[in-house]
Image 1 (tube, rainbow, N blue to C red):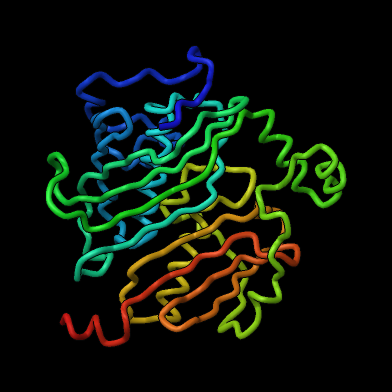
Image 2 (image 1 turned 90 degrees about the horizontal axis):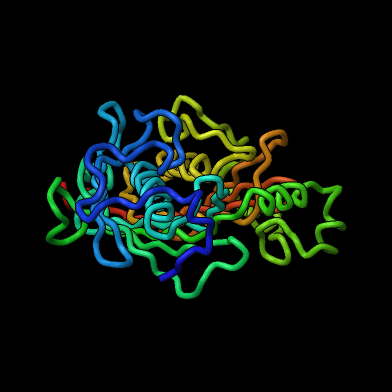
Length: 304
């Protein structure tokens, strides 16, 4: 279990043995207004896990992105409450994964239930950087999790001090690439950015990435770049268009580098058997990529 080495004076208060009663405070899930936080309670579960109650907004149609958002909010809350990450740290996700189990499609999953978040990382934070690897299990009902879970997930990433985050953002600019290389501070991508050419080969469609701020998932969560949940939401929208009637079984998004708000970005959609791959292309490189897996054709109809 990771214990982030942070200034305890700037860390949030720990919940009592019975957890937090009522809605989890919005600052714990990186929101401003309470109505945009979907966690209804938290209960410690041993030394490395917390059980969270959640409830999706009533006017929201449940889908994979909604449960990834629950997982994102719960991961932030766990990082602050359990790993003692200070509020002023900046979160950077590396990957987000969700898999539905059972015979029901994702949109039939319960709108309210419990999510058990457990940290999976070994090692300690260095110079205030807390690395995270958090697994999630989703259960129906408002009581303590019991029975088989209907979905599992995983989020990886890190929390950075503001000063280091600022250096990374500066290094992400093309003009700063040489200075970044010399300083050892780089955009959080692979050593060699993936070329956009591979993403564009045999693409079913190439479209502009448009961030829909009317989506409750994206509301009240301002960042200085295109946030990761915008990629997840756009990818699931592509799935509904290019794999209509197919049951989405799993979704994995890998965040390779910052997607700049001030520059155009494109979505390249490809199909590979039972998988749909959505790549975000900007500056001639793949900045994020989502892989969605579906049940074989006919499975959903057979369940009807």
